[in-house]
Length: 328
Ligand code: FES
Ligand SMILES: [Fe+2]
Image (cartoon, rainbow, N blue to C red; front, side, top):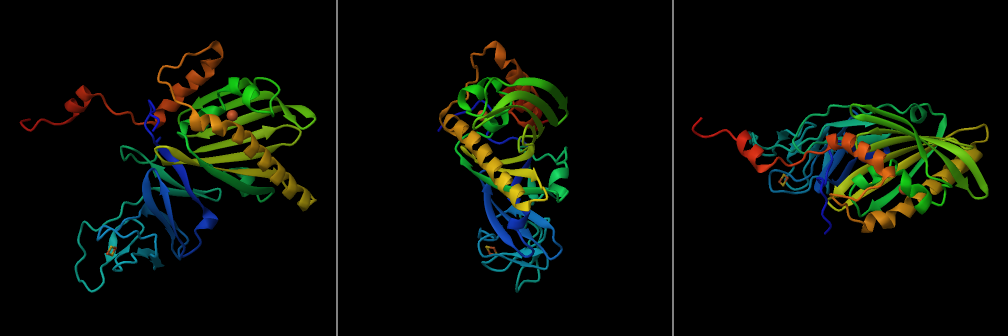
């Protein structure tokens, strides 16, 4: 097992499902952050995300559980839990044990994605997932793809700002991209890169504008001969792997079939580019003291901004100071 100088899971919003994967009265078991989770949607159309194992005898409520009146009913003995995780019914019993609770995760559903909020210290969400106008306008053809990758999620986060790797590993870049915009705005980061992008025999200037919201969402506007939008939604599965998904949005034209084909071509192109990174990510280490060159300046600057999404373990002395003394 590889070790990393950063915790396995960053704090913030992360995709746990696409909206259409959880229809009304649907139940979906998933595994993220090394935990079994259940997602369900009631008649009220609200999605909920909770830890999956029933506090009674531990059944997985996402494996055979049913949605009843906006609650989920455990398949084993029928205990029911509402959206806050509170048990609202124990069949054949007049009393509900007060500890009968499932841990409910904060969620937000936006741009066709159900996001859940993870925080290692249990803090509430402190930033928002933005609406993506192109997704919500109905004027863009969109599709999605992705795969599991055996690497720390931080690898995908840093990929855009590691400008030195583009023209080495990626076939679609003629030269090292140049940073033309840099904006750190609380939990939101924006960087724009200019590059000569190559596609078959065509080489054209392209601008890639990345809007980064935590570690789980990147919205990329690509302005080139063919302009399009990529929405990356990436979630840690466990300490060694991530669920890497993305959507590609391409403006619809009068010729619907053309838009659909272009959307698919561009999505395959993005997947091909990512596939060039994957063997490196899956086999590299993450040195705590990397030997750096001048061109790595932006990466280091970005890491400092990105640091805010990790809860680092406190040094021992600090931990002891925060535990109240029994005599006090
Ligand atoms: S294990 Fe869930 S109701 Fe018994
Ligand atoms: Fe890359």
